[in-house]
Amino acid sequence: MPRYLSLETEPFGKWKGIPIYLTTIIVAVMVAGLITCAFIEAEGSFDLRAAGFLVPRDGWANAITLWIHPLVARFSFFTPFAIFCFYWWSIGIETHLGRKALTQLLVLLITIPAAASTLIAYTLNVPDLLLGNFYIAAGMIVAFSTLYPNSLAFGFIPFKYVAVACVFCGSLMMVAEKRFLGLVGLWSACLAAMLFIKHALDRDFDDYVPFTTRVRNVFRRKPKLRVLPRPESRAESHAQSTAVDSEPEDPVMAEVDAILEKVARSGLQSLTPSEHARLQKAREELQRRDKH
Image 1 (cartoon, one colour):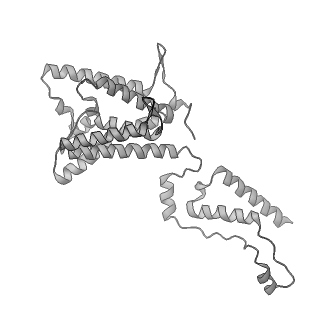
Image 2 (tube, rainbow, N blue to C red; image 1 turned 60 degrees about the vertical axis):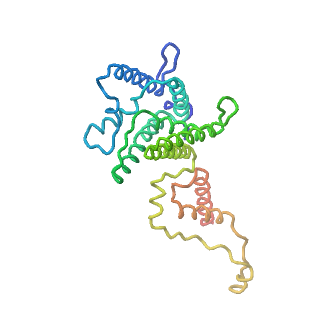
Image 3 (cartoon, one colour; image 1 turned 90 degrees about the vertical axis):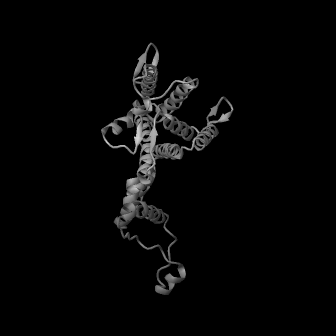
């Protein structure tokens, strides 16, 4: 069912009239992480790269840095714009799909690039270091443009074109720096974000069939459904019995046949509420005919 105006999309509360969303808390943590990193780097006794996710590297330290490294970054001239954009994209997703969907998306944008880098690093023995929220920002702009493809940026540019331009520029930046593992992480994050939003939107439709159900239906033994035969043509009916003329095709049975074919192909869960109602109505009609 649609999640508009549900508890998932409402703020936790308000502080001095400002709505507090999950996005608000995440952005506050990101800003606190940036400020902390600035003081640590100024003090000079700790290398920020030690807080990054490094592959190949074993141990619990790497598991911890997997969730810490998005908060480790340096301030720059563009930092305020990056924070504003992240808040804009994230709040759009949260108020449309809900906090749970936003949390799932952020987890994907952290783990998918890390998994891709780990797989390549251990396969080709090429080290890689993940530091900062670059992949999260790239995934969020793709997620937002998938959710609102025709929304206008700056009042005249469809946002989907802005997302394409940003991903293209990011890819060229990776190629220029010869960070090919970073290129894999960028595209894996963007692909994961796009597929996740498409899946979340598909769940809002009444005829949505879960992926696990579709997989089970592929391997499930198809039932052998038997339906009363349709009336034969007048010529064939005359050849079998000259006393009984053929009847016109029963529209109720034709409707039942179509619904049963869909059940055999995709399972009972694939029927929409209206198809369930038509099937029940046809069943009652056949029962009345049998009584007469």
